[in-house]
Image (cartoon, rainbow, N blue to C red):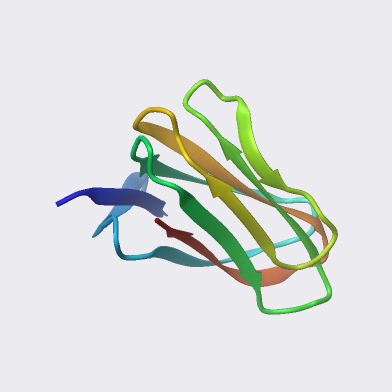
Length: 116
């Protein structure tokens, strides 16, 4: 069975990783303040199209979403004005990518989800 791993944070310097089958969603609730950037890593498998979403709990913010490949190149982004973000990405090889959520303006709680 194929699996997706999502690093969801660190406690006392130990990274916590959630591993789920690729047919299930990996999700993380978090919060962010204006000007901050939150980073997450996830292993994406070659040839599978993933949808990455950020759903904010408020409309009084502008959140941006970036996906960086294992070479630190931006491979997908949603920088449109608004509180929610959606990007799709199909990796050419299995790799660990970095997801970055940036609070361009405002503070918000949000749900970050990765679904194949």
